[in-house]
Image 1 (cartoon, rainbow, N blue to C red):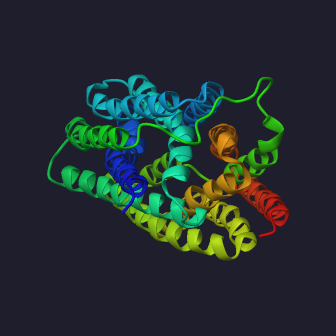
Image 2 (cartoon, one colour):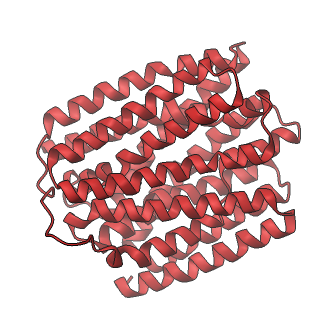
Length: 376
């Protein structure tokens, strides 16, 4: 096994333990905000935290592109994981919803700033594997942790742990993740694709079509915190919501693998399917469908976004532009996700459903156009 493949596996394990930490926490952030007496719009506005993450991804991608060095790429990855993972146990000390809200934003910012550099590193160290398979396997490893996290939280809550105890407990996998990241860096400190760019403005025009299609697709996708708040208001127990999130993460992992493999074979149909399923998950929540159905649809959509959309970016751009490309596309996705969720929370149910349908349909058409240009 080559050193690059070992680092690929290590980075997957880093994501596994990181996801165990913050996805375990995110499964109960909605009920936690209700416990701290926040309102529905506040819970939906937590999706702005993902916008913060995607803004951080934009700056992370720009920084990696401009500096163009191995130190810049790895430095962004270390900074992001540290901020992202430290914020979770600090939620144990939040006594007001405003404090919890700010920590969620901080956690998202850390997650965001690392992503473009990490995804560019993954594209390099994974060797000759197909793009769909690379990001599908990485997403599946993510989701092992993302499944274990909510299950750990559900077990802790059922055993009598309070919210503060649960958040403190999640500090353990956070530490493991950072130790594994250090080992990955020691094994592969110098990146071949990290190079100083030519002068002038970054070539945003190269990534604008990708960004527009991805942002529109995400506008029709309900945020889990938004969804969990709605089910909590309906009287669904917090432990059941955490369990449903674990189901969503399991479906996410399986869907990412299936859709990633399918992407390498039949690109066009797969890229159009993801926005449609995302819109369907939003309709399920807004119309009061059973929690299990909503979780399954949500998991399929998230698996598609995390495997198929990342593959499209990596396949569309040469290595030196991937950090920039991931940053710009992720920013557009966060903007679309935030605007769409605030609209779905603020508007009547029928109007929110219309937002999901229009965004999902428009995103599918746009992604089909991109796939046609690629020859998929």
